Image 1 (spheres, rainbow, N blue to C red):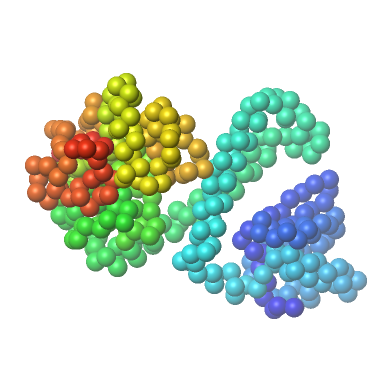
Image 2: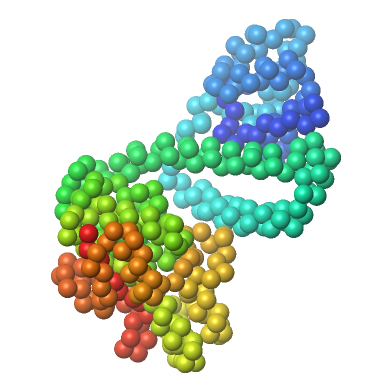
Amino acid sequence: MTNTLVFAPDTLVRFRNGQILIHTTSSAAPAFVTDNAMLTGWLTQFARPLSAAQALQQVGAADRPVAVAALEHLLDAGALIAAETTGSAAVNDTAAHDRSRRHLRTLARSVYDLACDALAFGPDIERQLGISTGIGLERRLMALLAAVDGLRNEFRTRRDGYLERQLSALGVIAGQQDLRLHIGCGMGMLDNWVNIDIHPAPLAMNVLWGLPFADGSAQCVFVSHLLEHLYYPHDARAFLCEIRRVLKPGGIVRIVVPDVEQCIDAYVANDRSFFGSRRETWDWWPENPTRLEDFLAYAGAGTDPGYLFEAHKFGYDFETLSRLMQEAGLQHVERSEFMSSRHPELRVDEISAVAKARYGDRFYSLFVEGQA
């Protein structure tokens, strides 16, 4: 038996009808089940790394076979693991990350479906679950919320170090001034800019964490086709407030979003060439959608929760975007055109494959600038 053991990070401990059940989220092995009070208390020691031999010395001779059998079962099920392996998984394990992304999609969709079911049942589900399990819906939901919140807290404790390592690799020092920030870079990197997006960007982060730069440290910010992926108004406004915070006085932000007003005009005018030309730019665009399907999807209506950051959450016209920017403290908000910024350093639209997409001689995007 492996010498030093600890419970795996995904071990679940549940209680049912006077019994304790121990299993993991990653193994199909049956749960370990016992009503032995001594054994239950003894096993809790493995919440921290502990020598199996030392632990077994604490058990009387009569109980030792039961304790050994419990350890063997939990080891086979993956609920107990060798302590030295708990930190050995590669942080950049691409296969594990891809699986996690799929799990997150499923989880987001499952939570939505669960909510719809719970609303349909009403109070009756509390009574039914209380009778069948002894625990109603609310307490089980609180357990789920606690598990999610615990995981998010673990993320938070690692956030600063994660960002600091990346900024150091990019040569960005604390308090550095006159930065140029390219937020939502995708695959298009701007030289001598800090290129930011979710993994695998040079600075990989969630922009809703807040920007890891000092107040007034950026001379300009370029954001192309990111804002529509944030929920409006709360998340979008919070993001723009962060941009306002890091811009130096007089600094400029250039924001590019889908021009939903053009979509509305094309829909009303039955301009099928506008919608049909999408596939010339994006070969993955669905074939033969109705005009309404095309327009509403582009504007962020009916977003499937499983698409996470990838889906559009809202659509902007100039009136709505300019008001949101002003609410975030930006001034002198004005409409621009492709590669036509009044500020030479912000004539960078061509780096964005989406910003330069067009039909005929018109671009699909809305270009707007504001000043700190």
